[in-house]
Structures are given as structure tokens and as C-alpha cells.
Image (cartoon, rainbow, N blue to C red; front, side, top):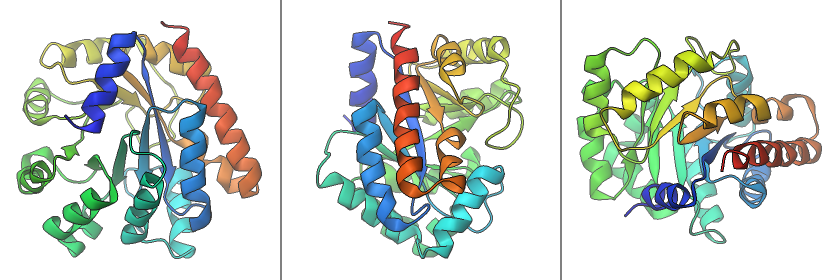
Length: 267
């Protein structure tokens, strides 16, 4: 049983919702990332999503795109991010870590080499936002050899055919994108998201997490009431664009506590 499956099963038995936090590896400096991950877990994060910095993050809005630029400028690459996971695992063997990034760096490294290195570092899953599910079978075959989960995206525009294709191959959790647009967008529609998540759940027992547009206790609680997990990214990442790293880390930890408290009100 993977760390993701174990964590979601544990939370389900407790009647609790998962809080998934996104952190860009190496933003704003490489030394910030691993301590930040530990502090977020201590504050209440259940699953960590580590962004792989990439020069052309087409699915991301300005907040995360600029974070990728800062990370790349600071010298962080894909293999550095894997080493950060390895360092994190020296103290934490339980918290699931999912990588989120783009296909190009993975293809450059090679599926087998990348997945083997990621597995040895302690990675539990990967989400490549520009790898179509219909073309993901080669990577998935390698991931399964190493007991790693491939996470897929579903969106408000996903057809029934696409939903059924993805749920047949989904492991770990399904990432439902609650908005039409890029990361950091606004105008969250809880009613529409609830209906879409209910449709997805008709086809699968795999947990469904919802992301994009969740930034505070109110939106987290609203989405937590209809999903198995809430995924928060830009609300954390934007802090590092305008504040010194220590202050940004403190505010990020406080944000985790705020979101965790809101989700625990659903118990």
C-alpha cells in the first residue's frame, strides 16, 4: 500500500479531509524548501506537493510562474528537487510527497532513470500537467514498477469519456481543477464543483482532491465539504514573492493552521 493510499485511508477512518500544500522546490532559495516542508507538516498538512521548476509552466498563473523563475535563478533543477525530497525523508518517512511539473525535464532524464531516482528519494507520486492521459501509459508502466502513483487532472470541461478513462487508471488521488483557467485564478463556484465531484465519484473509489482558487478558511471548508482533499498552492507561494523568507515561512505556517482548523470543523 502506497503512502498516499495509507494516508487517505487513515483520514477517511477519522472522518477528516486531507490538506494538500504546494511548494515550489528551491523558491526563493534552495535552503528554504526542506525546513518549510517540515514546518507545514507540523502545522497540519497531510500531503506535500512539490513543484518542479520549469521555464515554460503553461498551466500556471503568474504567482507560480514567477516562483519557478526564482527557483531556476537560484540554481534549482529537477534533480535538485529530488534531492530535497531525499533530505526531507531523513526525518519524515510518513508524509506522502507528490511531484508536480511538466513532461520535458522528465523526458530529458528518461522515464526509467527519473522514476528510479525519485523512488529512491522517497517520492510517492507524480503529476505531469502536460502529459495527456491517453499518452501516459509508458510512464505509468515504469511508475507501477516502483509503486509510485500517477496523478491525473480532471476539469469542469472534462467529458464523461475522459472521466471514465482517467478513473480506470487513477491511483493515489484524482486532482479536480475547480476553475477554467490557470493556477491562482479566482471565482470559485462551489455548487458546480460539488456536482462535478459527485459525478467523478460515481465511477471510482479513488479519493478526489480539489484545487485552484482555494486560498482561505472559507473556500477550504466549502470545498472540503464535497471533496476528500483540498489542494492549496498560490496562497502559499505568493508570500515568498514579497516577503523575506523567514517571514513568508511564518505566514505560510499560519495559513496552514487556518486551513487545517477550517477543515477540522467538518469532522
